[in-house]
Length: 272
Image (cartoon, rainbow, N blue to C red; front, side, top):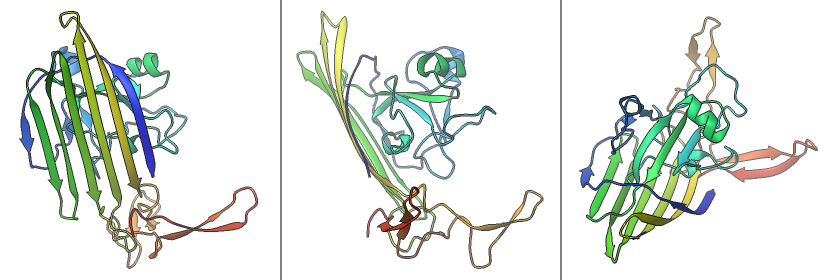
């Protein structure tokens, strides 16, 4: 379980619209809803093919410190500063609470974060003069139930409010015997904005709470036969992509790496 509470202060421009969707999320997310250059508007963020929990990793042929360290920024700050034990997907999802999302170039990532690679940057949806409501609901043939919504508007006296909820109930594609969900994540967000000096300046107070339980590092392991020519063959009785190599009861033994002694068992499920 990963929990994160954060309060940030940002100032961004936002556009007002009302959208309602009940279809599967597209593979790419538009980079921005505000006017940008032609080069910037072509930077789409590719989501993972197996799930939309986060952006796709892009290999540029250069070594990285941590192979699993996906760089994701929210309001110009990293959602996590190190990929372990808090994965970026535990605290960030491409949901309706984001006003815009885009891909940073290698040079931009290097100058802003000091790291090598591509990064995703996103900005929180803030309240505006007009009411704005957004909602998404997604299902698939494996039993996924995922929904998110965000509402924003004016409170009066140049105060503005935005609030959003993200809920993911994902059983995954694996046949897990010991748990109901492969990924169970919920994120709550709030933003309070005050404009002053005849709306020439503004300040926003942002709050986020995330609670994520995911088996991405344990349930997706699978045995197969390597043929030596780059191809593989399924093991007899094991279907890749739908069968899981995890223990049937979800209990895993762990060992003290310093002493080599077996210290007991842990339960790896998101729920009984």
